[in-house]
Every structure is written in structure tokens, then in C-alpha cells.
Length: 346
Image (tube, rainbow, N blue to C red; front, side, top):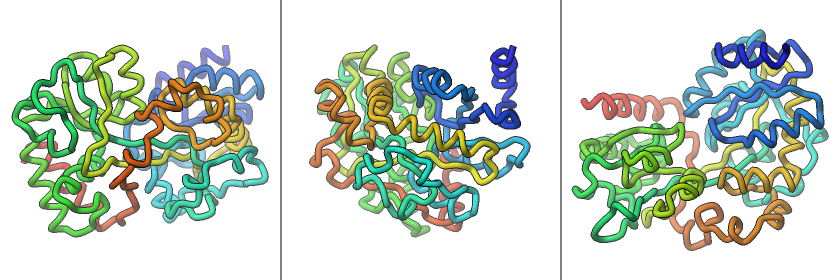
């Protein structure tokens, strides 16, 4: 009956309200971003029930966490890159108790201690990856796609997919113009907007739920996609290729954070430690196609996974790559203004 009740609450969108039970962990995460096997094994080993709620953008996650009070809190969330620093600076996060985390010392030092959270006081890396170009090579004729700028090619009119992510889309536009994807210059942001308006007649859809699906369903032939989505998509569509654009790929890191009003931080720490186990971390990377920061886990991956450039890029693939940073509220409002105009066709 307890599982049925939790399932009903999940269907009604009330999952944030069940943390009164100390044996419940409310996990707020991206869709298709945690294998069910991992959740099941955690529940079996700890006796803690996981209630899994999803979002499709950092903006949606952030807005919901700001609105929820202590009676409807999540215990663990997974924001991307700069949202960690944004939430930390706004006092939305609880410090991580490193004494309750096992396996932190196994994390790739190139992924820890980033500017978004020096010393990782509020976050623990979960997965990292890139946003590049997906190409259905079976439907593309002519010159191969090698750059973001190629999406503006007339041959792709009506066949382009963009992620439903304001910063990512503008990052692409800014890079095509030769600017940083983290620009706060109003003129550069406007130029990127104008450049993107030229692309809009070619855009078939925006998708940040499962960007591989427009390719698999025949809606799109080319466009923005997360590397793990490309890996999963290729399992069903062998002609789906992942391209690192010459202007530079968008690099990102998704991390575990504990919201400040979490009702069960003990369970949150236990889950983080569970996921950092090499066997579990390797299982996750193999299942959903993104790179694990757990170094000892990579040793457990077969060459088919560890040697796949889509998941584990080479140094050459990461030339000109850029992580997104917190650009501040003033610049963010400028982006939001142009994003609204872009999507409404103004």
C-alpha cells in the first residue's frame, strides 16, 4: 500500500511532500537520468524509498526549489554547472558533510574544485558531458556537418532541433559570432539574438526532455543534442552521429546538491555515497551514455564505452570547449527578454 500511495502522489505531482517519513528520499532530477536499477538497488540495500520527480530545464528546477517551503521539500537535486553557484550564492543549498560521503577521493580532480563551487562545499559531481551536434547521416546530403554555423544552411530548413535551454541556444549563437558563450555584453547578446532569428525558419522543435527523440521519430535531421542522448539514440538509429563543432562544444557538469530545506539530508548523503561506488558509477555511465567523474569506475568500463568519443571525448574534441558560468541576474534578464522574443517569433 505504501508503494501505491507513493505512486499516486508522484502522478499527482505531490512528491515533494512525502519527506515526513524519514525512510523516504525525494530525488529531483532530469528525466531518464538515473537508471531504475540504481534506485532499486539503493532501496534494497538501505530500506529508503526513493520518490523520483523530474524536470526538463535548470530554470524549472530552480524556480520550483525557490517556491517550495519546508513542508514540500526535495532532499536531493541535480543542477547543471553554473546553477550550483547561483543557488549557493542565494542561500538555497545546505552544505555537504564530507564526513558522511564515501568515495569523494575517487573523483577526477579536473572535475572537482571548479569555480562554481570551490572546495565542493555544496556539491558533489554526478556526471559530466557536452552539448554538440546530432546528425542523421542517412538523411544528410552534401558537405558533412562540422560546425554550429552549418545549422544555418538552407538545406536543413524545417529539419533542425534545438534544446529548450536558453543559455545553450544563446551559447551557440554567441560562439558562431566569435564571442564567449558566457558573454554579459548587451550588444553581443542582441547580435546573437538576431543571428538566431535567421535560424528560426529552419527550427522544427525545441526539446530538452529527450533530444534524441525528434531524430528517432523522423522530425529532425540535425541540431543540438547532449552527448549521452546521442549515445542512447544510436542504439536505435545507427546513422545518428555526434559531432564536436569547430567553434567549440558546450561543456557541462551535473552535480548533486542538498536543498536548504531538505527533510532527509541523511538519506541524501547516503544516496550520494551509493552512486560514487565504482560499480554503480560505471553502471550509470554505461546505461545513459554520459561520462562519470569517478576515476575507478572508468576502469570497469569496456572499451566500447570508455573508447566512445561521444561519451569520453579526446583532448582534440575539447579544443575551444567552454563551461557555462553564472552571468548574474542583470545579464540573465537580457537573455530572458530575447529568448522570449525568439520563441514567440517577434
